[in-house]
Length: 444
Ligand code: UD1
Ligand code: CA
Image 1 (cartoon, rainbow, N blue to C red):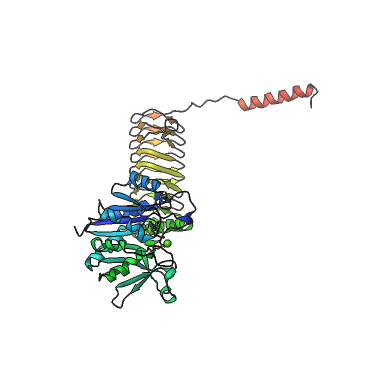
Image 2 (cartoon, helix red, strand yellow):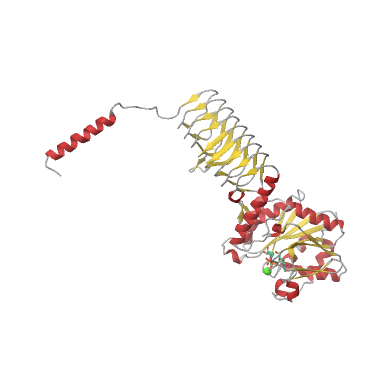
């Protein structure tokens, strides 16, 4: 089982600089907690790759989030945060029998990708390394541990900024905080770490020196894109990480043939797939998991909230919000509409200002509606779920649809137009008469 992989994720720290009543790792990017992004990057290594998450501050909340969302996750509790080495030590008893490789990473670096973790593991295995440190280069390496290499290019030590001398501070290659270790060999290190350093902490980074002393092979795997290990310590970092995440996604989409008219005002979650030749207009926010097909037009100013599908050639226009909506081909939802919990067929036209009323605020229930192919919904209509509107039916403008509609029917669910002839003239006449009477009564 040498090939087997497990992960240890460090998430016990308080995150003081967030100034939050919430644990740092539960702060969100594109509505997913930082820790979730990390766990999912690990899980994509292989379906059942287990993560052991070291929790501490507000551990109850973190544990609850993990239990509610992930299957292959265990937690271990670090009572006092005595350093990253001490944190990993809390996971050692859970892995005493494990013979494979362990990835160690942090819960506050949400930009790490599965591809990079795979590359790290491959490098580690191909070089038959015992401990591989993932490194990155920064023009400004302030704050990071510096990588000290031997003449043979092996890693000799990691020196924390606070312990570094001036010449070491000039080193631009830094420790990303991600490691891959032959667990059976490295796990003994955690009983032997000391806290004799500038911060009085048990440093995880000291496993490098320990391993060298045992005659083990320690290598560094340098990644090309240093954005991947961007860590979050403050709200400013959180905003910047969101920017990095969406920029990366937009770069990938443009490279695959999607037009993004204005990358700077467009937000697209990494979990959204978009087909070739689709155009995304400015000020569009696409959150969560969605599938948008080829030749679609989205935006400007569209909000897609997740679990949506938009079929080939469909248009979703300005001030339209979609949530849990499956829309087939060549359908238009062009202006000022809310489509939530709905299935819409192909060649459907949804008029401006149409609302799919899906939520009952008293029962707190959400219900879904279905519109089949060729349906036309007039402007300002409300579709109250659950209803089904069958093929080619026509809903007159401003209808409030509360019952199913048969194929090819016209439905008018609004009060009929009433016209009172000369109503305005008569009203004005009345006014005139009133004021005459008032004057003659000597008022004014
Ligand atoms: C660490 C590395 C540094 C590296 C940097 C990359 C050490 C000693 N230093 O520094 O070389 O360049 O990461 O980002 O490892 N944590 C716990 N329990 C603890 C302490 C920390 O769970 O007792 C967790 C934190 O919640 C955090 C992670 O470990 O998720 C990293 O800790 P942090 O204090 O941020 O490490 P750095 O000082 O950034
Ligand atoms: Ca620290």
